[in-house]
Amino acid sequence: MGTHMKTTIEIAGPLLAEAKAVASREKTTLRALIEEGLREVLRRKSPGEPFKMRDGSFKGGQGLTPEFEAKGGWSRLREAAYPGFFDEDGEKEQ
Image 1 (cartoon, rainbow, N blue to C red):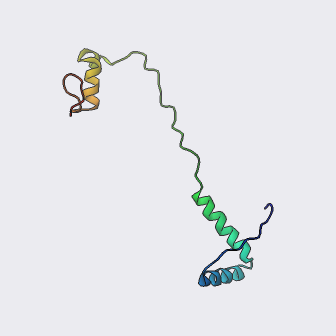
Image 2: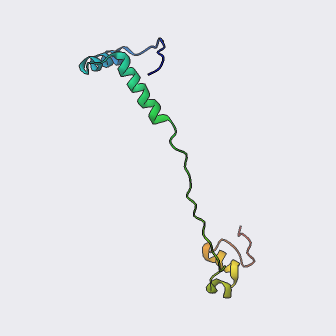
Image 3: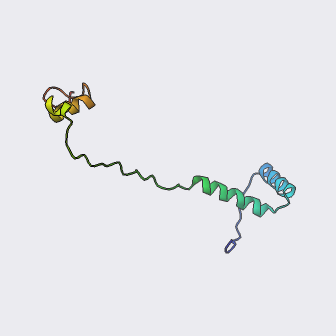
């Protein structure tokens, strides 16, 4: 991996003993075990790819369907989409 740095950390005794036992059982070093665990934690906590919304736009072309055009236009469409949310003047009800 790149350059190694020496550092000192405090680890609880039982955790260190368990880590040494695992390292011995897996025939690896304590340093390698700690680096593996640290990489795993950093991988889990790093943000993934940012969410990207797909392009859902479309070419409408003809405007409102005849059903909505003949029965009140956009205000009828709004009432159908949000029943009870707007009053008869198209204002948001309180």
